[in-house]
Length: 341
Ligand code: UD1
Image 1 (cartoon, rainbow, N blue to C red):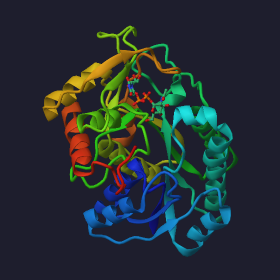
Image 2 (spheres, rainbow, N blue to C red; image 1 turned 135 degrees about the vertical axis):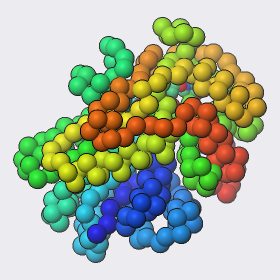
Image 3 (cartoon, rainbow, N blue to C red; image 1 turned 30 degrees about the vertical axis):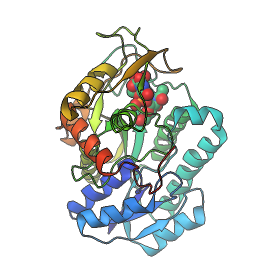
């Protein structure tokens, strides 16, 4: 029996693949390669010394998704596949709804058809909107402000409805805070296309000289230095949470949502200073106005995952910076051979 990883060539999916293989699981990986490269699949094999089936499949194509279940004995699915850029989701919402929602509906339909009902779903702390208080607990009200976030929240609700209709589904909804870092080997990591939207890849590209300076989006938030506070979590810790969730589903029925965060908040400038200290690189920055849609403070209460999954993040901010930097320096252009714009 194997675990199907959708989006397994992407940043988080590729780390999950390595973790699963290193823990003795068989895996099948699918990815549309629309926002990822085949090279990451080769690197998963190189890192683990293990072969596994890979298919270039887009979940929007239900026939192809069905074939995977036809040919492989799948016991559970980790569903990472999805579009994830907030700004882009405002410009092309239909593409986001089609890709993320239709893709997930197709996946659930073929899972049900083949009687595979254990699912770990990649959600996001974005479903908490601008929380009234921190740390954020799973029972907080859910609200979203952009199409990307709405796809995550809609999928959470679809999965709950699915379980109401058929209680044999076992579903873990994992709400990620801010995943950064990379595998300690420096062989797999985040390879953004074009200008990075997220903070850490932007910092590493400034540090290596590909971009002149960081823009700090706002210094007038109600935080110790005025810049936004987030809960940065090492991607390897994050994927370990997925394995614990998979094991939890073997023991428990139902739908359960879990925060995957460290419980610690750091500001943009905290991250910049830690990064500079660890790497001995200056990060020139300019403060610019707030980014539309950004919130001031968000960090997790990770107690539920600790109590029910037996999981907690172990790696600190310095390790996250070190591993992000190792990835960037050993792969200046990510998985791309050509120099990026
Ligand atoms: C963003 C998304 C969130 C998504 C997550 C995925 C928005 C509004 N939110 O989270 O929905 O789930 O990515 O990883 O896009 N910052 C700068 N300069 C930069 C980039 C970021 O100052 O060039 C600041 C931001 O204002 C924020 C912090 O760095 O305070 C983290 O930003 P980012 O990495 O984009 O993550 P989020 O905005 O938290």
